[in-house]
Length: 307
Image (cartoon, rainbow, N blue to C red; front, side, top):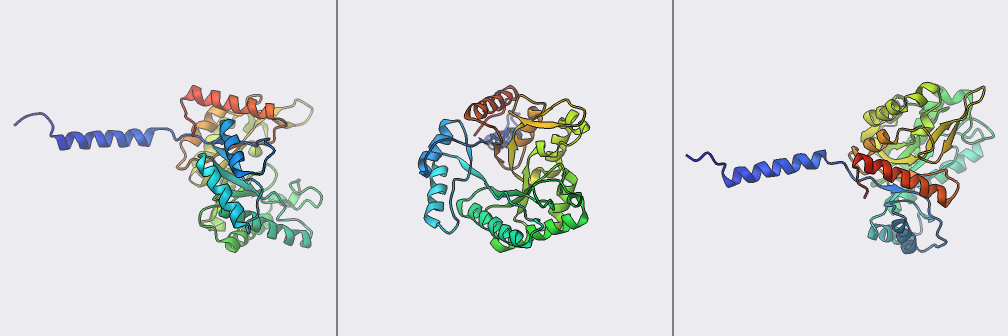
């Protein structure tokens, strides 16, 4: 008998090798951010994202009941291979004022319905705050069981009102309200118990003490290790420490602070889905360009591709 492998065995071995390489290959990262083109045309907006090197976008203005507009947005952005990363629903679902709270619930439902209509990865907000003056502000009850239980109920009600099939409702973690850690987000996921609930990751929002600031690489890795299977979209910015007589962190352009973007991008590339990374909270087109170029540079050093 010949010691040479059969053609069938050779092809099977090559197939297994290709499969192994595919499993180990990093997933292309989708980066996005605001654009400053003065247009309402979905095709022009989608092309502008691609011109800037973006493959993800914030949802253009639309109403979920405007089916033609929603279809036009979805079609135009898909044609340019730009995904709609998120629909913002930035309102206080725990507003102490009952009338405002009811109006907020209706608004958040509409935003999730829009995310479903355009095929966005998620609708996103924070859990809210019991602060009566600042919708995201601090309050002693923001870390309470009452806050947690109310947030579970809010998330369930929003999801059940829309019954999303291709998008998710997400809550960002915050440094002074729940969920405020990967573990507390895990607890929230289990308590909400809805397929339509997922994770929107903003690492800078989590860092609220020196230990986390110094060891943010470990925090980032913990987030992806514990929450990675649920992450559908992320925010990109950076964090610096303004030295005063008390603790003062400030958001800055990616690359000007101390966030470990090597850990962040490696975590993103290893996710089971291509969760977009969206630049936010910068002050000008030049700052967004600076942040984008920094992220591209770090990814290139790691050998990570972009979609």
